[in-house]
Amino acid sequence: MSSSSSSYDSNPLLHANIFSRFFHHWVTPLFKKSRENGVLHLNDLYDLPAHLQSTELTDKLEKNWFDEVKRCPNNPSLIRATLRTVGWKPFAQSILAFLNGLFRIIQPLILTVLMSFFEPCSWMPSWYAWLLAFATIIATLSSSLIIHQYVHKIDIYAMQIFIAYTGLIYRKVLRLSLYSMNSITSGEITNLLANDANQIQLAAIFFNDMWIGPIHLILVICVFYYFVKYIAFIAIGYSAFLLLIQPLYSRMFVSIRTKILQITDERIKIMSEIIKSMRIVKMYCWETAFIQKICLIRKREIIQYTFYAICNCIQVIFSHNYTTLIFLMMYGTMWSLNIRLDTRFFAISSCLLGYMKVYCIEFFSYAIRDISNYLVARKRIEKFLLLDECERDTRLLSSSHLEISSSNKIEIINNIIQEVQVKCNLKEAHWEKNGVFKLQNIIFDAHPGDLICIIGAVGSGKSSLLQTLTGEIGFFEGKVRLHGSFCYVPQEACKYFN
Image (cartoon, one colour):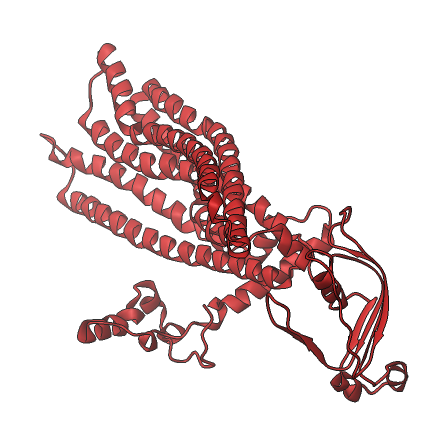
């Protein structure tokens, strides 16, 4: 998402004052242009600020990940690298969510006090009632302004983390060794970018509700206890039940999600191999067998998705029926014990239970679910980031004439033969550590004008020898020296070396 422009002065956000940023007035010219022209083009959009560019975000996460690998080479944690990248700002935004909850709790309390003004023989002065009415309006307005600012800011931070994750995965793809590329399919890489990296964005949105929800729940329970005493324990018990079963749902979601991703990777891998084989060998006669194989794997995948949907539906049923069940249990108990039903308590309980249903129960459930999905995705991303990369082996040396001419060290120039030549003293080379295929005892020198023909059957190692000279083979013993500028054009792709 980096901007190609070198100047960012055209973005009005950089020059907007605090009120323009708070109310998003700096976007008004863009809306006016859209209304006048009827459509917006790419050139009409503002340049991206420097601190929001994908390059800067990815560089920061990549640096922290490399530091984490150096610090804990056996068990590096992507979570610690992410926390060092984002810092404390996303968590500081939780103060806004906490204040929003306070205003949502205070508003019905003020309303119940105001209701006493309309009772017969009320001694409340009019100015005090007007003050309470204005306080109710201010509480509602403040809650709306705060929650919109919180959602806007937390979405920006979540998107930044997601962009950094996708950039980190993309850069890793460019550094993968040929052995690692053979061990992972393009479909699995696409799955990492499309699904796994997206889980951090969802988890970041609801992460703060992990601790805000229980605190607000305790405050609401205290208000209930003030009005109905021990009847409030009904709400306490059911709310505690919903919160305590969330870890169980978390483990179930992690288990099912892991199985789904494993089956999805298996399906994508088999489909990629089938398509590749059909292009090479033209195995169209096996179409029916391949369809049955893919359908069987897809059936297993759909069954796991069904289990996941069932668990999610059960969780939604508990959360969506929260207000109704609490009302039924509390007022049923009060009716059976001949406790007088107070209209003020009915008003405040209706407002607070509606708030608890959304912010304390549903958002807390979403946080548990999304964090569980992220923990599964994080392991898969870590496994991918720890794959082997292309490295310059000291046993494989190549030097161009440009390197020779730009070097100022006489001893290096003397050691490098400036004549174009290839020296190969290969003892052993193979793709897999314990594989059957090996290249052994291949020794030759190639000079300008020499023609060397490598003849052999399919799979005898002709291309492997060429990739050994360029350092692409996985395991290698011996010495290879390449002097001068050279290139090779294989059947699959074109690569040039200087």
